[in-house]
Image (cartoon, rainbow, N blue to C red; front, side):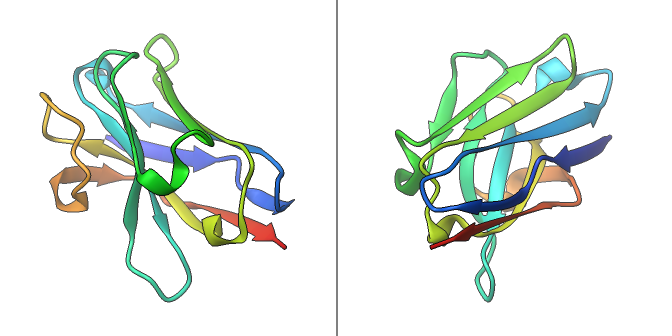
Length: 124
């Protein structure tokens, strides 16, 4: 399984970005997928995840109402629409595949395949 994240960049506070993650896997639709953020000097943390069904999503409290995660099983791709960005959203964003099929885990240790990360920088 390979994951390739893209879409990061430099944006002013209040702006928007859309991250994409292309997944090379014949079993793409069988697993939940998640986005994690690693801010400078901090540990990686769960941001958002989408289950096997498009309507099954989960968010960190800090991004609820601002971020939207989605998946397109026909394109083997997941997305993270990030609106109203804040300086604290700055960091490397990783997409990952969960090995826990029945729920959207927030624990990074339950994810077994990771993309390389895409950098999001939000200026104040």
